[in-house]
Each structure stands twice: as structure tokens, then as C-alpha cells.
Length: 296
Image (tube, rainbow, N blue to C red; front, top):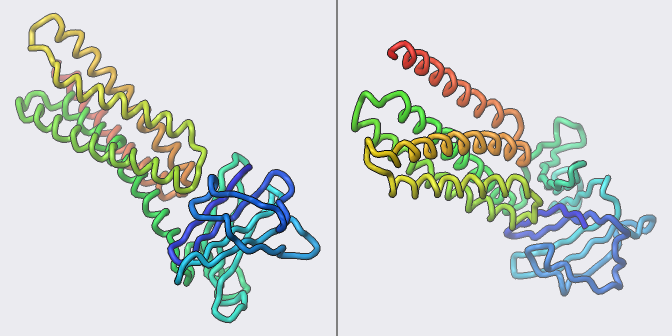
């Protein structure tokens, strides 16, 4: 069963796309494992007499809370439901959900100010929903991981490689930057699981790469605690491990950031912003590397 999910504070809404015929209204269904609100006592009615597979279930879950579950039997279609004070389409807030070919589901709110295309405003509407909360958590997850793993960590590596002449300032700067990098990344990692559980998303590869990044980062932190003294033989192997593990970590982090932007469907603005930041760091690293080679 493939799912498209949306939840709200004053409105719980779940748009469900089934790979088989939707269950009729006289069937006893328990979707509680698939959605984050109670579905056991919902009223039910078919939306169109000509297509009994499109089913709407609903219940008043509280004084100011309604729960809706709208289902259809075709994964290649889209579902929409509108809410207005007068029952008209124009002036309503519409929730529309659909499936991408990779199985990812998405739901967006539209403000229907008219029937013309320029009067249909995405990511807007009068419904008081938690969609903005989910979007905020998702974007905070992405921003924290981008800043932590994808920006601060490479900057910390640049400081360690190219500013050793300013000892011990470079060392403490390197440690401080990497600590902030780890903390930003850790919070972003936790928020990733919040987002995943909220929308029941299948992001196995993104999640597994994120776990690998966190494990490598933890090893880097623990390696600092057992750093051998300068001039000893173990220090040579420690340096080899610390430097190469850091490089692998940065490569995985950058790759997973771009992958996460694609999964989050944030568009070209996120791609472009991070690509510009990454390009600037690469240019700075190249210039500093050339200067380092000339000094040798």
C-alpha cells in the first residue's frame, strides 16, 4: 500500500492511494498503523456514485478538530479535497496529494482564489494546519545537516590543513568548529527521524547514509580523546586514520545533502544555494593548497 499523508492541528487529513480496489464503506478498516490519528470510528461515504472506489471517511475528533481520510484505488491519479465557509470551490483551501513514479507521496495546500491558473496559489490557504509545522521541521532538518555536515565540517578540515602556522589557534579553532558541526548534525539527524515518522516516508538510502555519517562523526570525536603524543609511532597511524576518515565523512555528507534536497523536493533554490557555498569552499581550498605547495 502506498501512502500520501497530511496532518493538521484543526484538521487531520490523510489522502490514501491504494494499489488495489478501495475498501467499501461497509468494511471494517483499521488504518491506525499507517496514519497518525485514530481511524476506528469514522463515518464513511463514497464521493462519486460512478466510482465507488473513491471513499471519504471522517469524524469529529475534538471540539475544534476533524479527521478526514480520502482514498482512491489508482496510484497514478491525484486526490484533492477543499474546505470553505460557503461550500464553493473558489475561495476554498484545497489539499491535493499525488504520487511520484519513485513511490514518494506529497500533499500540498492551495489557495483557490479563482478558476484561472494564476489564481491558484500553492503553499497557501486559510486552513489552520500543521503542514507548515511539518515543512518547517523538514527544512530545519535539511538546514542543520547542511550547515553542520556540509559547511562547518569542511571549513574545520580547511582550518586544520592550511592554518597550522598559527599554533595553537588553528587547533582550538578546528576543535570548536567541528564540535558545532557535530551538534548541528546531531540535531538535524534526530529531526530526520521526526519527519520520517510523521509522513511514514520510505527514505532508506538517505537514512542509512545519515547513520553512517553520524557513526563516522562519533568515531572522529572519540579519536580526539585517544590522540597519541606528537613524535610517537602511533601518532603516525592516528593521523592517517583521522585525516582519511574525515575526508570520507565529508564526501558522504555532501552526497547525502544533495540527495536529501531531491527527496525533499525543495527545488533549485536549495540546490543552487548549497552548490554556490560548496563551490566557494572548493575555490578557497584550491588557492590554499597551491599556496601550501609553493611554501614547501
